[in-house]
Image (cartoon, rainbow, N blue to C red; front, side, top):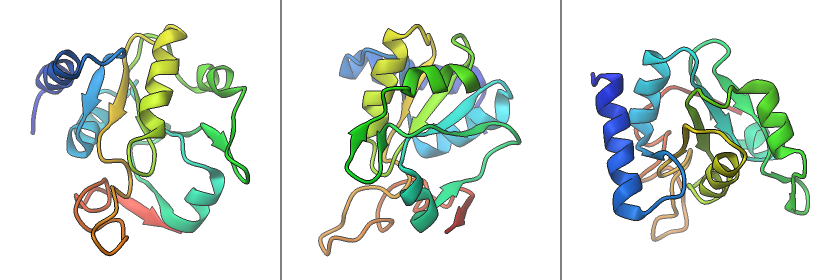
Length: 154
């Protein structure tokens, strides 16, 4: 197990290398470890309610999991209350880790949170299900589920 300082240093290294406009990027395993090491941290799942219902969600510490849709289902309409809802669950100076299906919306959420004053906004690389393999399937080569981290199915 890594220390909190080691995890944050790795995230910051990715921030620098990729010129990210937020605090950094974490692998799924690093995100899970950070959640265990910092009870103030929040994992913010930005997928739609339908995705949670159909696919499942990660399991982290009590009170650390938050669901705030980045876009609304159906229609993919942006959630105009995203930052306001986020402020209801997360402190602007605590680690806020964003997760989506394949790490696309989570990056956008991390940027928006950073611009809204969240100083420790992180993207979780690979997402919950990861990208598609050659057959169009997810959960087969990357992501929270593939990495064997705790989750509950739909």
